[in-house]
Image (cartoon, helix red, strand yellow):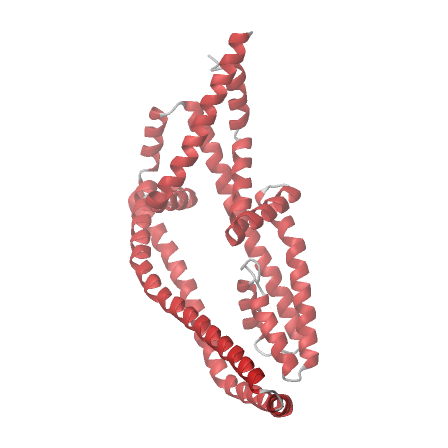
Length: 372
């Protein structure tokens, strides 16, 4: 009996050591190998399309891989071109209407300065002149200290902002190299997919390969489901915003709703980056009915997003809604912005391992050892 417990303990210790080693290895090697991990993920996604196109056309697999990658790059370039065109169109529209709005804002600021700031300044000046010399020096010293502190903070902010420019420029060569190596690795992995699979079959036990195939299938299905879920959520936001803007009789409702739908993908703030300044500006400029309408529309978008996101994600990825909500919250609290992606991703990987039977086999191995 004691020998059985010792064996169970040793097997548990071995499995724990393997897991710790794998986590440490992945963490330490990720900065050096991440282009190839990206290539592996892209290869898994495009492999079915390459196989189908290869069967339909009868062309060599390498040529088919090049075609698929080129189509992928053309689609990405097309989306980028469309985005740039929309930005140019929006900039031209802003250049046309912005001067009038700026004049209106300046008029409001001047009116506020004349009606509120100047009388307050005169009152403070009158009160200041009634003070003793020591009190005046103390107040002037405090004002000077505040001015120096504000100037120092502004200088620090500008300095850090300017320091980001060379950092950003320094990232461009690294990004280009990453893109190049990822593209080349994607080509070779996809082209030699079956050769690498045979090599892996000879190198690793058959059960490991079955588990790996099942895990990759689950993860690929989850990634596809996640992308579909995000597209559905964006489409829902665009539809609600478009209908709301049409009711409010806002010009360029379609373009604005498309922009808000894309911005809504941003965690924390999302559509608020557009709605909140717009609501404040409408209220300040006297368009109270528009500000109220936009506020109601913003609340509707927020409620729709909070209610729909866990349900849509759980249905598309195949996760329990409560587990998805917990993963989102834990990820948000643990890693902040990044946690909103890492939380559901970790849950997806956990479910992939569970569905592939990895945990069951590990449990059986710990209790009974290798089955012959």
